[in-house]
Image (cartoon, rainbow, N blue to C red; front, top):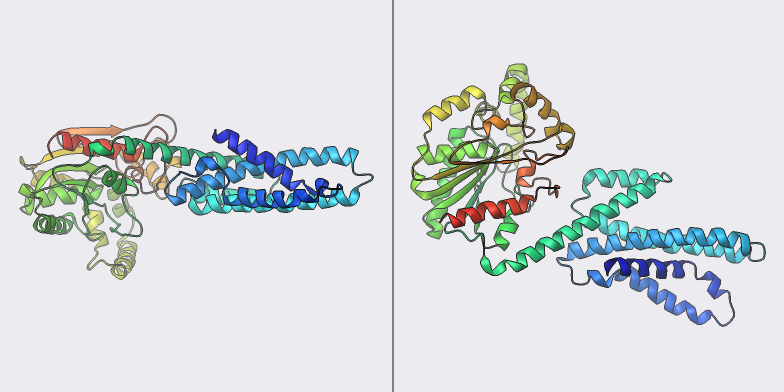
Length: 441
């Protein structure tokens, strides 16, 4: 049905763009008004099939993709039409022929810019790379066609994927599959903060809340030693329990956040307030890449980087960021000492998750650079942490997909908001939390 609508829109657009020939005929002036109305209608409501798509940004993205498809169909037909007209109509109607070309170019240009602006302003999956490629290739013949096909393909798949996810959530809405006994506490990793504008966990929290979960955030500073971060997390747990009366929390912690939470549980007296700890891509056994950086980079440069970082993050909310302490906490030696002095609590259920990035080129900056160094020292990794360092607790889940892509350190928290083939990160967390519910947590 959607394909039919897009084809019909393209044909109608072709007729409108090339209507000059009709206007030039006797008694055909009445055709002008319907053409104008149809043109406005197609630009405002490109496809009736998109009417029910929500939220609004997704509907706009779907309409943009529909306009670009209509543009391609009408543009192809217009080119063929004018080539034919140049042989049979040009000698006696050169003025009409010229006006027809000008009209077609203007009409099709309006539709193109309407469509491209819609997808550029709303699509998440296009990313910066495809937007730049689209802009650069837009001025290169043939290349611009391939770029446009790519943009249409990406945005169309994005709409279809999101609509399908909405239907899945609608079908299981009454089950509240993520409504755990205890609320979720999300704890971020190093060098980030919990912000309302840019959620560290991407689209994951909304997906879980749509399925019944109650979500809180650590709200701790971006860079401290494990011990200092652990104390902040412990205070946050006590605050949540006191304010809500929930008794316990289920912690989901990423990267260094997993170490911070283990410290809080074992050393800060909150083990009775934690039902479960799920660590995501946490370097439990350390990160030799951190050792390499500290060894390779001189003290003078380290101190300059640390001073710049600490100064910047004080400006955006940290009280006392400590760049070097946070990095030193991740070394192989530091983590070995930490593991010996931080036994698991028998009151808490521990589990862990890790992933593998298959090719460096598929990781976003800076993971595409660090991947090779980590691989050199530690083998297979997620772009930052070795596969050997992930496992901890009673259950370990390893995320691996075939092909070149893989799943990176950042992909595991949906930092890039990317729909990865073979791995639906939002559905992964729904399953993760659903399992916690089934276990009584």
